[in-house]
Amino acid sequence: MSEPVIKAENLDLTFQTNDGPVHALKDVSLDIMKGDFVSFIGPSGCGKTTFLRVVAALEQPTGGAVSVNGMSPEEARKARAYGYVFQHAGLYPWRTIRGNIQLPLEIMGFPKSEWKDHIDRVLDLVDLRGFGKKFPWQLSGGMQQRASIARALAFDADILLMDEPFGALDEIVRDHLNEQLLELWDKTHKTIGFVTHSIPEAVYLSTRIVVMSPRPGRITDVIENTLPRERPLDIRDTPEFLEIAHRVREGLRAGHAYDD
Image (cartoon, rainbow, N blue to C red):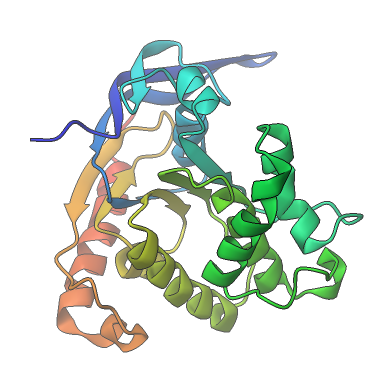
């Protein structure tokens, strides 16, 4: 059996604040395998984003261990193992879309001769060819998020970490981007960790759904998604989809029974 791409063992993280300690994660253990699309869902403040930030070496755990491709998160970052998509697109307004996508290539020291090919490839992947010379303010919110995803894909990392990237978008745009994200995942075979507050989004996108409890964040359930990989939007009306969504909802309710 292959080794997990991301492995967390008894992970704890406590923030020290002026009002006392805040227990963000407690005893979190999880294996994410190559090619998985794993969604994290739970109430606000349950540690979903914190877990992703620990994987990305943006936060340091206070207990337990986490590895990425068999390395520490810091080593994995230096090895360009993952791209990160934040809640907001975070594009530099003074740079064109091509210029924004080019930024990680500049920072990581990719040869200039390779920049154009990398940028063209990811613009195609997110269906933004022809918009590379536009500035962020000239694009819709959904297009800006696609540009943000393209930036995270530019250096061809095998892992994509996505922190609720569609949460601020309206339902119609969100549905469209969900479809596009599944297409992108199918084309690239990347391993994706995805934070969401939406039950339908988690069920529609994922191979597995990790349900988390209110703070301190614990995993209350890991749900295997038995839906076929081909998922038109109307699959959300099927009994199979609704059954999985019901289990997620029950897991969220059960999480409120946990306490310190």
